[in-house]
Length: 238
Image (tube, rainbow, N blue to C red; front, side, top):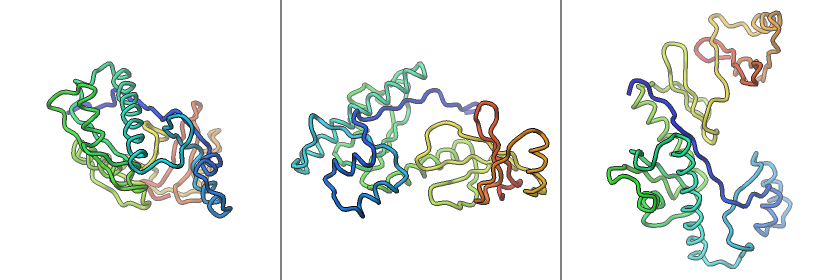
């Protein structure tokens, strides 16, 4: 694989979208302490798969069956959106990874999607299940393993629990962050002998407006298209 690239990205959400305030009331909570937890979680919206009105009297078996129906419908839509965007079909997929933190069924949802949608008989799969709210971390590790194995990118020091950086060449790196949307949100330029005050003065002299977040991550400058350029010390220390 000499020229790897992303062919397509497809997303899908359950149809009901609620704010955290709405989710708090829908779950039947009343305590102000719990409400503060909901409103200070850095979550704007949650998506729910409901069939009719909310039923808090569902048994665990009923909840799990509703989860399965919703996962199949949402998963099918996401896969179809992805292959449509890439101009391919499910028969072209060699590997399917499925991650969930909300339900458990056997056979797993990934196997059911493969059979239901007509994937190739040779497709491989991985299922990351049963991990609750920590489910995204093993999924993050699978992504890291992929880039390390396929592109031979060594892992750099990890300063945050939800962030892994892989070295690209002598000075570059690829950042993989838990929960981030697919795509690129910024790129970084490393400077030898980085001195923040001098760099700020130089950027301002060139007509840019550097932003110092004060978190040791160097400076950020927005380009005309709104893409942020991170200016850091060569090696990543701001």
